[in-house]
Length: 163
Length: 103
Image (cartoon, rainbow over all chains, first blue to last red; front, side, top):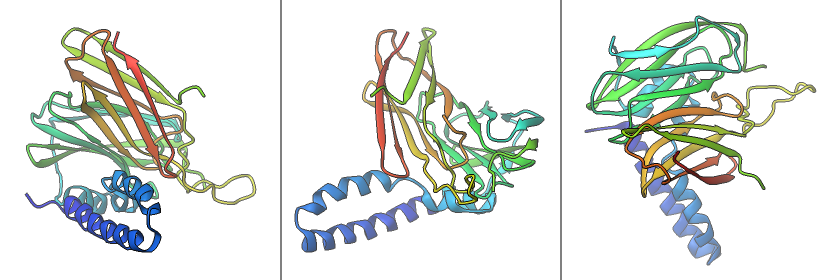
């Protein structure tokens, strides 16, 4: 399976290894303290979280596009009075779920959260998110290697991203 | 120092429901302070739940998660009295870890 996220992580890892070995030569033992911290961070999909567009974030995260599915359930308030705390939850009846991600298309950065669902964990997540203004909220579910999504509009009375 | 993480893990016999509440500013970097200056980003990036030596749930978060984040999930198994380990790392490299007994 090709996955640009993996590919990206891999290329970062190579770069970090390169940097670590350079540091080893230049700084000696201090590099040992540095390397584990970098290694622990390399799985975080930093670029995906920096995307303004939801579609770009999904592409970076999964390397494919999602199709809408009525088997994905997204629970969100119709109106959120306070955009800084909007309770959102999602679940699905799809099998073999490996990941669930939340996006808010009108936020400065669309990707909010990406959850890994190992085998044995139920495909259901609740969290609280920030919304800058009225926007579509999208949940993406990765099941059996494919992406499915559900979208709902949430009207925001007072935005939660300031600025 | 008291932990920033509060966890409640409840076993129903077949599954364990986990709710976690973490104290963290979750500054996105897009909010201005009273002087009109942007508050620099500072948010939890990764959150992990481990049971019996295995990761049962993990999150990658951006600055769009609300201040003092809350998350809920469930996993199959989990015995009453067993421990669940929760840890996070934020965008400044700070971390916290706690364990909670499943009730």
